[in-house]
Picture 1 (cartoon, rainbow, N blue to C red):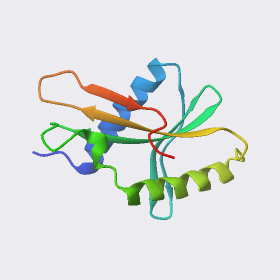
Picture 2: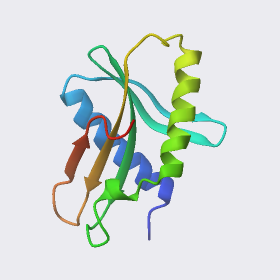
Picture 3: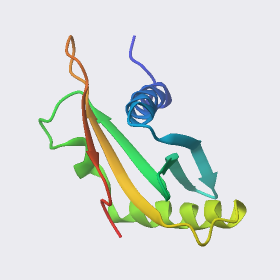
Picture 4: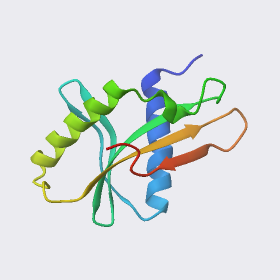
Length: 120
């Protein structure tokens, strides 16, 4: 039986959250929605509030996971980030937009690629 997209997304985000907390980051929010825009993970890295998009693939045959993030998706993330920041009164906090790409091949440990400040 195949897994649903949401189940796969949750699995990817769980792996990303574990990766980030092991680096000492604090997870602030997950699956934040603002209208039709979503941010997978919002975390604190030192002074930075970091908005993360997480992509997982089972193979790199069609490119790395992070290569599947479109300009439209980035615009949606920006809009949702603005909403989250206003909602939490953190307008003066430095922000960053990172990407985590996960390659999870059968019978292998997941390969996690973290790209800080992936887009501005």
